Length: 77
Image 1 (cartoon, rainbow, N blue to C red):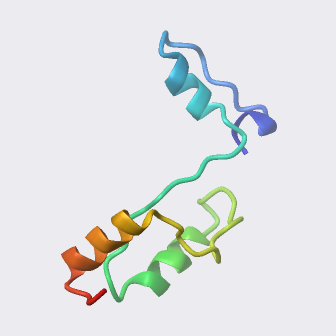
Image 2 (tube, one colour; image 1 turned 90 degrees about the vertical axis):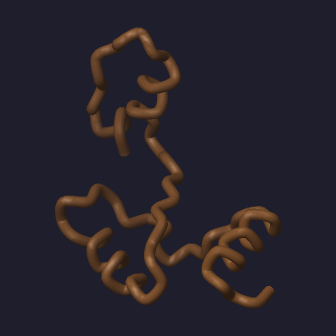
């Protein structure tokens, strides 16, 4: 959404930050506690959150990253 809606932010000397903030599309990964998935989806669909494209998409991380997440949660591989 960002700059495509005309939300151009004033430059502050950090080109990467400005490019990110003015990007028309951003992928964000938000950690959600196990068992709180439905509450998180409901929160993301509220009026104050801009855009809901991709909320039904599965997370596609590297196998190494997924293994680390499973290990931290105590889930068998």
